[in-house]
Length: 214
Image 1 (spheres, rainbow, N blue to C red):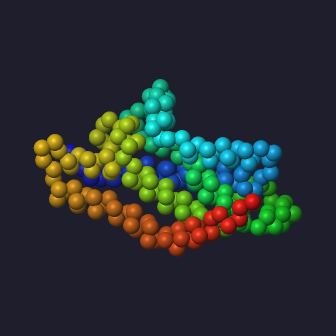
Image 2: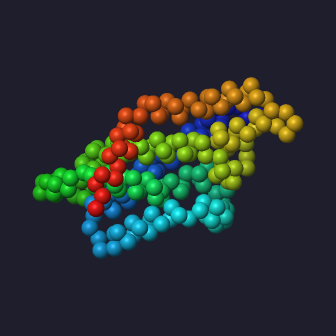
Image 3: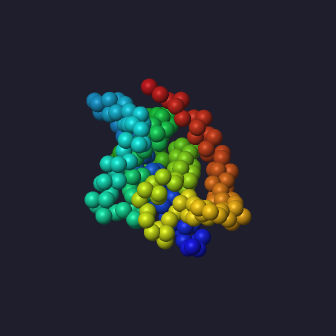
């Protein structure tokens, strides 16, 4: 059996990349829906939310075929790349929070010569730390505990994540419950630490999200 450190490093790589990818991609898309004026923006936003109604089971096979044709199966890339294309729920959450920020700040910044990107980076993001922290917590927990995707895409044990590595402690005829419980507690600790450290931002982000709807 591979050492616990290997699974831990793989989980940290995948989870960190997913958190960063979700924060970047979802915040950019949400900013466009919340602050930029376009004729069909509301229709496009409804279409984005409509993808939440598509069952995960419907997209598993075509997604696997896509990564298989790209020769990415048995690598960590299938676990990382989807986060960099946005997640509808995170886009909705950030968009609703961005709409609570007064537009007067945008107008004042434009008068001073700030571009759209400057407004996004220097005004919107610093004021949206509670919502961004909420997205980071959800993304961290969701990817840290993700079992289905590693089970589908990973073949070699040296690429297993923690969620998949825990299954190695369970045998067909014998299960090392003492080792399984010990590793399970170690796996749970980062989630507890992240939640309690960012609890203030998490509660504030959830409480304020949705107050500025149109």
